[in-house]
Amino acid sequence: MIRGLKPIDCDVHPSVPGLKSLLPYMEPYWADTLVQRGMHELDTISYPDNSPLTARADWRPENGKPAATLEQVQSQLLDPFSIDTAILNCLYGVQLPFSEDMGAAYARAVNDWIAKEWLDRDPRLRASILIPVQSAELAVAEIERLAGDKRFVQVMTLVAGETMLGRRHHWPIYEAAERLGLPIAIHAGSSYRNPPTPVGWSSYYIEDYVAQATTFQSQLASLLAEGVFRKFPDLKFVMLESRFTWLPGFLWRFKLYWRGLTMDIPWVDLSPVEIVQNQVRFSLTPFDGPEDTADILKIFEHLGSDELVLFSTDYPHWQFDGDDPLPPGLPDDLVRKILVDNPRQTYARL
Image (cartoon, rainbow, N blue to C red; front, top):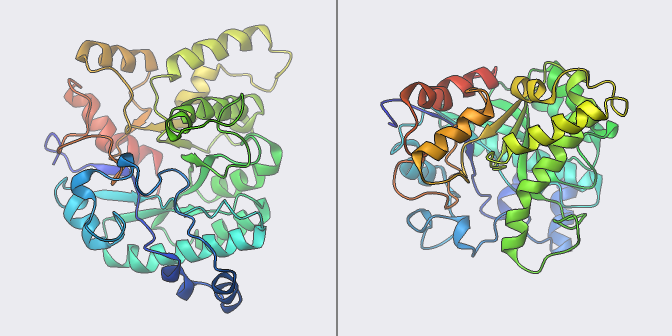
């Protein structure tokens, strides 16, 4: 347990062992097509296999991928941390194919694999619905196909795709999610349709990794400016692996210019700060704040709300050592909010 509490872990990453694991969950046409084409694996969109960040040393098996079996997740995460509920966010790159139909086939296969091989075998597990964001129509169909299974608690896409997430061609996805009571999770990662930085392609993985935070800022600005939050006032967005120490400065800047540019976006008739506090949440890990307790508490004070942060371990990624993923010095009442209360308020299906 953490501080005597059984936490709800909002960001756990099971690994697809290999493409062959998905073939039984595909229609014969797609299974044959992928074998005949010699398709590559799609699991390196955020964490390259050999990067130290991809798995903590003690969570990396001698053979195979980390977090590739339920037994690994049980023995390394669920049992040692006394996890009450873990939300599985599989980072298999269903968003990578240019073919909308192929993306949808991958998404269906991964979602069905998660249900059969994971959710059916441990009652502590919940999952995100992976969607082929290449096509809003096919994404909505996948959401509606799985919405009846209450173990799927949110819809997940990547932070970087072909277009900004506030644009209206994405709105059918948001309408379906709001109607069915499912938050939208936006996870770090890219379909690499565009450079990971605003000024072009970078040379090294570390540049891409660090730039993810500014990508989240751009997408949050898009959702605000395009009026998504007003159009879907009951829809929550969960930023996963976005970090959040940038949020106070971002909101100060956005609010400052919103006051002077109201004529540009008159539909944003609430303060951006109020909108974010009502409808946006952020995963705890990876925590990008300082080590000093007083400075950490100041960041949480600047957030202006104790309801924005959700507990996550980011298992099996290497974001902390040992058995304490919390920043030091957090008061007990805030710890309870992060570990239990905030996740339950965010995910209606919990």
